[in-house]
Image 1 (cartoon, one colour):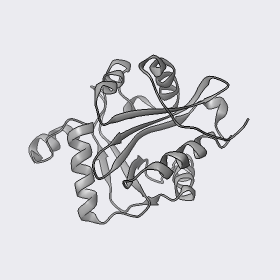
Image 2 (cartoon, one colour; image 1 turned 60 degrees about the horizontal axis):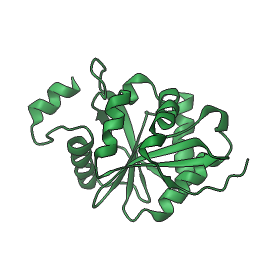
Image 3 (tube, helix red, strand yellow; image 1 turned 180 degrees about the vertical axis):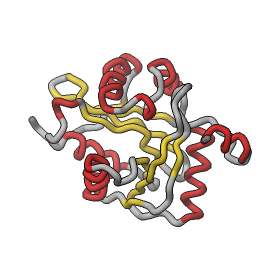
Length: 188
């Protein structure tokens, strides 16, 4: 399989296949419902990029692009194409065009698969930051998720981390970051 990649901005008609890959790659507490995820396509800051091989969608990158940061919310390669270099090339291509620092969430390095995922991102140039991060639940009935964050091309200073977190909490998760009581209730 060729590892060349060209990012393609997804169309709404591509969404069912993208969600199929997302559903296979992410557990329930790390993704929205089909309808909730599809609704994001109407948000100006939300972009879905895909990669095709022989006209078949095999990978996607879901990114929130803001004025000062880009937030990769989801990135996955279909199971049969993992390890082929497709995902790495897709991510590198995206990063080569990104004008802002890029922020993403990862599970803490407490399992072998989480450590391998962190190493994958580090090989590409991401930095694991020291700040813990509670991701609010993406679906009703799910608990918040303790995550770490990684950034490209540089590690974050605490002040910029707080700024990124505020943008992400307010726009991506729909929370009023200045309302500490509401944030605490959502995260408990």
